[in-house]
Image (cartoon, rainbow, N blue to C red; front, side, top):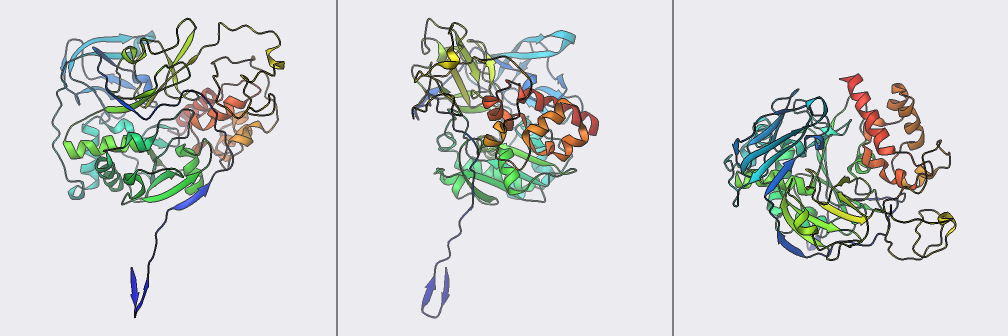
Length: 461
């Protein structure tokens, strides 16, 4: 409010607004009803090291050890200060290994009531940057922070130029971030305050055009930017590209808003609480809803009797584009806030299906008529891999200032110089999920990008 004589001027501060025009909102059936069904507990909880990309996992426990929520189960061989906490208390019941003794998962038989390691409540404003960082590391929550380039768990001793937080999700059937953060506004702000200690740059918070959560809209110690547009507008990589791109030699850290609230909970309550609000989605779910559960929780209790029977189903921890295929008795993976069930499609046999004009058919292009409805899509590939078809398909759904087709070709050719010139430092596999969806060539673009990032990291580090 500015007063000059008898004239009063009101000054309004509004977030920067960026309109995303390229992209695609896939109209799938099965969006979660905004109803919280309650908390889910399972007898066993599993933590899978392969969720933590860029980490060489080493065991911090052995079978039959007693743990609390917050007790380290794993640590990173190259950075021992990075710990991975147990989400529940109980007894380590199994350590499953695969080829070359690779750790597949650590299983904890959970107590009926969770007991927590006490890390002590802390006032973030009184902490130094090193103290804030040490608190997150000791509590086993550092895995929530990822870095670009390479899209791996952040390296603690590399100070980020900036930190980017995405406060909305545009993926198919994505859960509402507003709904997940209801009642967690104080934890969210504390988490943002802690992040602001970890960089000499800025903390950028992105919100959607429909974001209504006050904790997001009125967040302090951040630069708020509003994004409007279809998927992948909610991807943090797209937001970085439009706000302040990553150049060679620079490092930025990334998180999503619910994970920031988990970090804030650590400082406000002094415990490692890895309980998430998770959306159960998909066309084959009879009753969609939200549930509260720790990461690693077995999902069979919310799936049994609540999915279509008599057909083959695809169970996914995550969204249909980037999620991980799991079994019907699988667990919630570490970074996911969504579980999806769609038809597998392997029991469907069609003759000349490509020529069908059925209203059940969906096409991102003009192959089939548009019926302005939501679709029950299955997991079939509908075609085999073939040579790259130059058709500008990727460009239509890729809203970053990067040439996606040329970047993919340079990765396949292992041309590191071209990969750098074409912007590989800015991308993650999820940024190519839509390109993979519309790709006539049926290439596994996310896998190709992941391989390119790993190769580049090996060469650079």
